[in-house]
Image 1: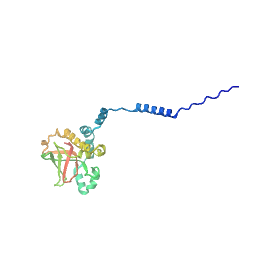
Image 2: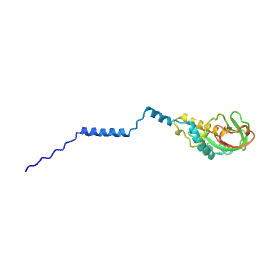
Image 3: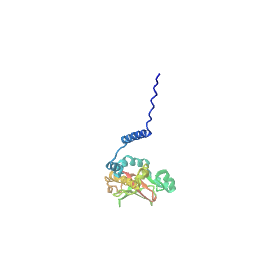
Image 4: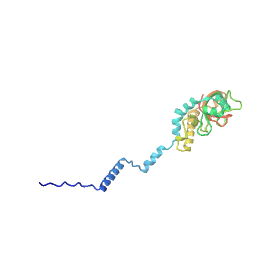
Length: 215
């Protein structure tokens, strides 16, 4: 009886297996890779650039104004608390980041005086006689009180200090456009007004408020 010897199995060279794996990997990489030209990279970078005007328009009326109105404390109450214990009053009523000065949201009613040098003086009852209260009425609106008193805008939301400062300026500009451009400041002289706004504490004797509402 004749028997047939089994056909020996051929071993595939290891280098062929490695070559096939590399080829498959290259195909997968080609399928999943997004090719970007210099123009598309530049366009994507441009889309991410901070737009101060857009920030002001999106945040001032919808978020900042309601936040300040909700947190506003009566100005006489705040100044009395500051006189008693500045740190305790700051922690209770104010907002700040790091070790900087506190910023406060406030409201009050008082008698308006004659506007001068971009400020509208207001005489508020129940304050010390040597306390001066003024509202910024432009055209230049200075400071970061609106940004800081809102409580939800932090430095970590921005790329750098320049953007953070631009955000404050944008909110000031938006307030000026929405509130102050249509305001007859001269007609307020001698009238009783109510206001809501924010100020950064430098000295309790001079309170310069950036308003978000005047009536």
